[in-house]
Length: 427
Ligand code: GLC
Image 1 (cartoon, rainbow, N blue to C red):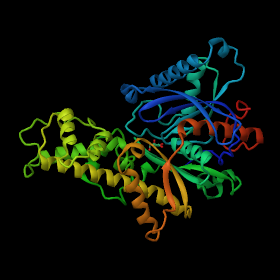
Image 2 (cartoon, rainbow, N blue to C red):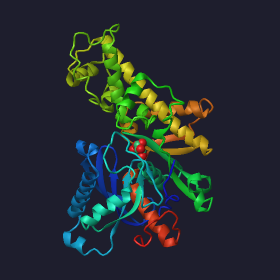
Image 3 (cartoon, protein in one colour):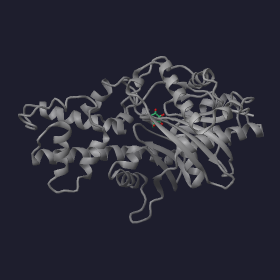
Image 4 (tube, rainbow, N blue to C red):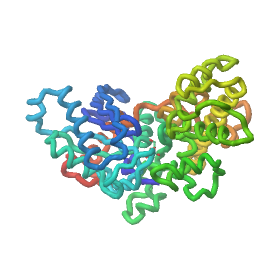
């Protein structure tokens, strides 16, 4: 439960030009966002850069060099060099850093630990805002960091900008997590600051780390293997059961286990070398199986042959389909628990929830399965309209980051300086 120093929602009149940098799980994205005078509108230009796989287990310096390279490329492409050199005012940037960070200020954040399979040395325990600033200074880029945010907080703010009934922002993607708006008086971690107890503050739940003690949720042997073989065993227990990064791996582990069990005969007399490679299938593999429209599962058969070199029998195909359904259903139902928990904590009876992420957007039946689980947990009378509805969100890591940068600068102008470090730089 990390306080984010995002102190309230936009009113729709935020204005200006902002940069946003989005470091999620797979890509790096740089955006320029224009918030015009019109309420709730925005324009965006953006470039996406694939994060090289080696970077995820590299070192801190390589990471910041890569990030600075991408930003430099982006602004040199979109602006004239002399325009940049003569630029007196620095362009404000919102940095979406989608990992758990302890923030004493909005322009500060100590990385608690890497999640989502990242393992870059020299960053945990450090202030990523300072590391980022140093990389910008080295390149003399005319940019200032105005806000370091989580993707869920960005999603919450961006969604609320266009639909003011949105009260929760969620990500169901490579990782899973949510943010909601709390009031300062209920946040023990900032009690010593004696802020107005009614002032709102967004909380990044980091509920991917729910049940790290394994006190609540039953785990399968496959969940245990995933945890033990991950770069951070014991962390992100909930996330490891539901997030996109792990769904394909769960599927693979079950099949390998069944194959190796002498009493069960699957993929007999076949070479399963490809299936033995860890993380060789991602969630899209399961999506394709669940999407196979044919009764005889012919598309699944093609997929198994093409990607794993396996000729699969009808019962084996049915097993694969059922297994994908089970993994996908467990993920969707547990994901809905996070939303239900926030609603119950905040006594929210009805609201919209803004959701983003590859699993939410692309995994078949995820939305319907999640909605069904919510109905069961929230005890709405049968046949009535759902009161809490999870909907596709606005772009939190781009537009949300720009809005939060704008909100922070507005707070400085208005003299509400709680949780802002570089107040002079933001004027
Ligand atoms: C992981 C990160 C969290 C992020 C989520 C979704 O759970 O720890 O910060 O919000 O993934 O990207």
